[in-house]
Length: 207
Image (cartoon, one colour):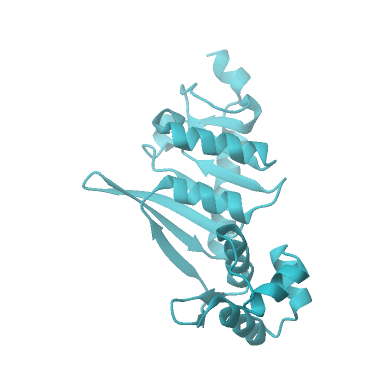
């Protein structure tokens, strides 16, 4: 089943019109019509928007077709994959939040991607370990939390309805993404608690 067939089948499953898909994905009607007629292959960014729109309604593209399930879980080997997905799937003024971040561990590629995310107009907020002054953005978008609450750089990322957590095993890094509204909502509440109770830049400068 190709992308055109998967798109038409997903709309049929959800009883969506093409206009409904326009509203959910942010793509143009002409673009969707072209894809569904099989006249062009979508770019990676367009495909991510399609997949994200359907995933919000619990319909997912698979290798052979489509599948309806209450959540989606994927594993990535690179943090860059997470940032690229966030960049492609979010619109300006939407938010990416990172709990227990450590920017001193970021590669040049990650730092460049963070700046690209900010230039797009996405809001990026982070909690850091108290005493860590290594930041790449404006201080107002950071809060500092008690080291006892910091998870040794096991960063958690929340954006849209996606929740990502970092695992390490035998010096290998994995990033597990769960696409589930309830999980992302609960993770966001926990982040906001730490954000509310964390220290501001001015407060850590005074200590």
